[in-house]
Structure formats: structure tokens, C-alpha cells
Amino acid sequence: MGMFLRTVRAASGMAVAGGLRQSQVATLMMARTFASSSRQYEINKIMGSVEEAIKDVKSGSTILAGGFGLCGTSDTLINAIEADRSIQNLTVVSNNAGIENIALGKLLATGQIKKMISSYVGENKVFEQLYLSGKIELELTPQGTLAERCRAGGAGIPAFYTPTGADTWVEEGKLPVKYNADGTVGLTSSPREAREFNGRKYIMEEAITGDFAFIKAWKADKLGNCQFRYAAANFNGPMARAGKITIVEADEIVEVGEIEPNFVHLPGIYVTRVIKAAQPNGIERLKFAPEEGVESDSSVASTGTVNKRDLIIKRAAKEFKDGMYVNLGIGMPILSPNFVDKSISVQLQTENGILGLGPYPQPGQEDTDLINAGKETVTLNPGACTFTSDESFGMIRSGRIDLTLLGAMQCSQFGDIASWSLPGKIKGMGGAMDLVSNPTNTRVVVTMEHCDKKGNPKILPACAFPLTGKNCVSRIITDLCVFDVDVKEGLTLVELQPGVTVEAVKAATGAPFKVAAEVKQIV
Image (cartoon, rainbow, N blue to C red; front, side):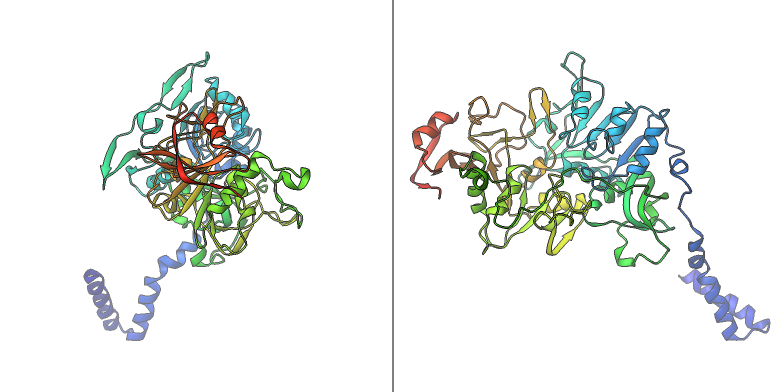
């Protein structure tokens, strides 16, 4: 500042001596000062074609691909890569890989992807088959960790510690990365360094950056400033910042200044190129609100009987207390709000970036940018807000969520949970490891059938399947009963479903348990 003032004074003195008035000097100084600001409008990051935008994507590149399900995916850019079969052996970082022959599913089908770094395989059968047959590598990463690794990469932070994945295969380095053709594991993940902070275990995760980031925005201008829309922000925010070359496809290209400064979600400094999106995103699971008087996904209305799922869901709804912030896992937990008492008000949070989740839409009101964690169409309640995936999981890990309801494949008597992998079948952990990472502040309630399809107990002394979390479950709700869980003392039977006896629960449970002095009947 001192140098600047001395220069100004010197220039002023020379100008006055040369015959210019002080006011003329001030005008010249103002013009010189703001010349760089006026020149910023000469920046134009808009590309003439998608082919020009991806011209330097080469075989072996690492691409960060934003999106969650089909929401917020960069389909125009992906289609351009699919069209250029000379581009091979890609490493793609994305929460999931679309669905068969849609979004990243196209690049799996063409064999252009060598390795995926993802949290969820989901229902993409091609993805699962390629992985289990050893044709691609897969670095499974908890969803919140994946978002934070990208955020850290964009912020210049090489690594960080997280509670997510501690005491699981993530920490132990046992996640299969590549299978052999005979189904045996050929390559596993690297073990994580563990440290203790304030009496809790944390593991170290390294940041992720990419050669390219493929990003979907609602609006973008010539400077590269971008605005996201609703839940389409998801991974697009953190991944855009972590790409060496960030390419944005936007639904709308607008003039500089049309996006209000407060609504610029991605500053142009992170963006290298912009193109116009050639097509809208699809909807993976179109879900509508039931007709008035009909219970959503309930067997009661259609058959007059209550099935196992109904028993579990209706009992789970009683876990909601007024004023709670609640996260719901996919499957049965998503249905539980349908049975919550109308006098109770809760805020539903979904890991893909919504707080204040509303009901399913009416036909014709569905929106490609509004989905829940199960990729179903949803609405927003008044007062709702939307945000990126790294923000969402910051809420979760820090214990801002009061209650999470999760499904499970197995639970142990001391509160371990296994929910993401079966022998010969991989779904991925998604956000579940993050959701159980802070059980001191976030109560973890499991909803599941008491036995598997073969009649085997799912509540055991120790889980046989890979863990989602250790010593984290507070309560288990099944079609037979409710167990409270103490991580040191074990299980206590506290409630029975209608018509179920203690003896029946003992016969169906693989672990020992205590019986409360007063066992309530669920009504």
C-alpha cells in the first residue's frame, strides 16, 4: 500500500507540473485503477463444441464426475467420451456409475473405464459384474469420505483424519480392489493409519484430485461462475474444485452479472471451460404421492393384512420425536415418515444434500433435481435448504443429526452393524459408514427382518459379513420385537410385536439377550 501511495503522489505531481488540473489527474487515476476490472469481461470460457471442450482428454486420464444417481450428471460430456473410442483406461471418481447404458454406465459398457473410485455399486448389474469378474478395479470409499477427499483436494489439503470406516475393512485394508477371473481377490486396498483424538479413533484419508472434472450446473456465465439447482449440487461442488481442468456443462448459459453474487455456488476461478448441456438429466426412480386415503407402499390397503415390512416401519415411526433432525437410509427407513403422528414435526435430512425433505410429488410435479438418497423423486417442505455432499456429510459426522434409521444384513449383540456386502454380491457402503460414525451424538436405530430368507438369524454374537460400523447401534426393530443395545452389556428385549412370544424370539435370535422386567406389546 505504501509503494502504491508513493507512486500515486509522484504521478500526481508530474501531471500538475505538466499543466493538468488535479481533477483531471483523479480521473486518469480512476481509469487506470479499474482498467483490470473492465478487462475481466473479455474472459470467455464458453466453448463452441463439446469436442473442443474435451480435446485434451487422453487415455489414462483421471476424471472426477459429479452427480448422484442420475441427478446432476454431465451427460453431454460423458456422451462425447463414449463417441471417441480412442480414449481408454480411464480412472473415474464418482459416487456411483449411473445405471446400465445411462450416464457413466455407457462408459462401463464400452470398456473405456479401467478403474472406478466410488461409494456405491447399487443396482447397476453391469458395474457389479465387471467388478466381480475382475474386468475393472473398484476402490470403494464411504460416501462422506469420498466427498471430503475431493473437497480436501480442491482446498490444497493432502490428507485428513475421519472417524468413518474405523474398525472396518476400510481401516484394515481388506476391501477388494480387483478380483481374479476365478473370483478370488487379486488386489486389496491399503490399510489406513489410525490415531486417537479426544478418546476416539480416527483414520487418515488422502485427498483426491483429477486431471479433469466433469461438472453439471444449472447456470453458467462466460467467466465460469456457476449456480447449481437443488440436489444437483451434490458432488459437483467439491469435484469442480479438485479438477486440474474443470469442464462445466450448464443447462443455461447466461450473461455476466445475471447470476447474483450471492447465488454463485462455484466461482469462475475453478472453472476452465463451459459448454451448453445438450440434454436434460433423467430420473432413476419416479415415485409419486399415493392417492388420498391410501397408505404409501402398504399392504394393508390392498390386502387387509399387515406384512413384516409394515410391522417394522410402523414401529420405527415411533422413534421420531418433535424437533428432531433425522436421516433415513434407503429401503424401509424411507417409508417410516408415512406413519409418523401428525402432531410431531421433524426435519428430514438426506445425504445427497437436502434438509427439509418433503413427500413424494404429485404426478406432473416431479423434478429431475429433487431426489432422495434412494434416487426417488421428492419435494421440499417450506423452509428447506439444499447443499453439496461435503456439507451434508459434515452435518452427519459432527453429530448434528439426532437420529438415523438404517437397514442391515446383520447386527451383533454389542451393536456392530453389517449392511453393504454379501458373499458374491457387492452393493457398496454408500453413506452408511458415515451415518454410524458418531453414535454418541447420533442415535442409530436398525430396521430389519429378524431372519434372512433361509430362516437364519440376522442378530448374532458377531457379524459374519464385513462391518459398516462397530459398537454403534442403539436399538434394533424387527418383525418380531425390539431390542435395546448396550455396547458392553449386550441385548435387552423390550418390546414384542403382536402375537409374538419371548420363546419365539429366542428361537429366531442367534445371540443371547436379557428380558426387560416389563416387556411392552407394540400397538
